[in-house]
Length: 273
Image (cartoon, rainbow, N blue to C red; front, side, top):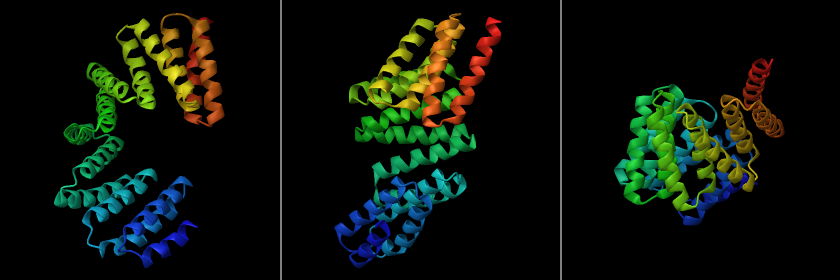
């Protein structure tokens, strides 16, 4: 059905309706996890869109192609397509689009382990979000910057940016974002010795994940809580949290989560022996 839309789109390429048909078709394929089909579709559509002279639309296609490559783990190809889209967005002054693709480039650099470049990209995008009054984007970028600092071992800066992200997301009512910021802060607070605050943040995150019926998030924050309880020498609580985390990860098929929890449970058992 989505491939049939492509033919309809080609017949009416100069209309606004055609662009909407194209967008829905790509989203449909992505929703099915058909990245190869979506990529093929966009590659076929690109030369047709270029004939319209709409450089912003072309830039969006280039960015979307980059995002498909990113989702497939082809990061160098993603960077190449993102870079091409940046040129067009700069030419037409598409600030919002430019901020979005610069964020994507930052994510690629995170994958490369080039944290200096990633930070530079995220800071540029943050400036654009603030300029446009985009609170949702600002909340995401503050988290991204915090993650860079966490990866480079600067826990103080990481926590500062996670807390700033939390404040923005509370203002905008972004429950998913609040849960993410709360959960990301748990381990950092525990590292600082602020155990009560770490547990309080974890419990708040767990409540939000439960309200959203977000099983993966529940599993991740239960793991964080289990680690904190183990650190404060409450093995029964730690075992309960880690056991529940394992259940969540098994239900969602999160194998890496299962491994992390299993290792922590093993450490807990050794400590009690």
